[in-house]
Image (cartoon, rainbow, N blue to C red; front, top):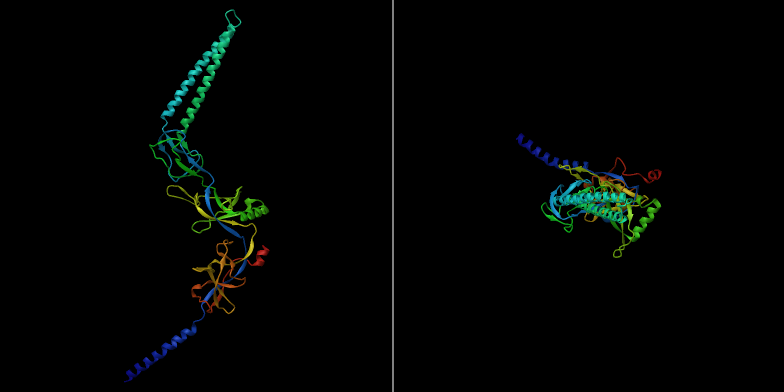
Length: 393
């Protein structure tokens, strides 16, 4: 009986304890903790994006200068070559034989010339004797000059034969990366065969992009104020969206406007250093000739703009947004517009949607619900200098 009574009390206590525990847990919970950072003014260099392409500063199409069979290909397709490296060798036998034949002709005329000079000398010696005649001297002189001219012609033909022999050895005229070969060993090539292979230089590279005439004139005027067109900085956004880690400078503004598009071509020079080497020691570089990129032209003078930590910016199908915490510690979703450029990778520059001094959530966004209260904690460091700090600098 006592045991049964104890079991009943334990059962009642369990029933009463469950809601009490739940109420206790609810009483301990509160607004989610988040880390916030202030919206601050930071110096930013405005920039404009243009669609452009990477182009090699030098490009060479290799062609055959003489007609012969292709015997040797000395390069690996896709490798980098140095100026003077052997690339192709054509059949040399017929050209070597022609050189030797021309050398023999030159030697023949040289022997005849030496004999003609001796004959002329004898005729001049006899001129003051009864046996000498002026006509004999004149004839010997004419023969000597004729043979000398024939020797010079033979020497010119020998030089051309040696040039043709040299054309059978095709070497790299520039440093660069060589592409696919269009002709394989054993084929007969002529000057009309076309391009055998193409070499494009690698470092530096050109960034070429069209700009609307009005914008191009504004860039030109700004460059004049800053000291020349080379003072304008150009950055490159790669096809994967990443900003290339080298900067370039404008070096060319075309001298005519494309009538169909009312644009003018601008060009910048940008480094393209080796970033790695493959297992076969082939250098790897980031920029490729013909690559479609975005050219980012920065203006000469920086301006003050609103900045927030990059971590505060979220993106959905509607675009970019942040969570703003008001004076009542309630979070609200706010759509923002970001600038193309930023003074630091960890900083996002906001052109629309925020005001200086507002607080945005940088950590704990997954716990935030729009319109609900939060427990904000200040971030350890601000994302950028304030307006007063920027002016001091």
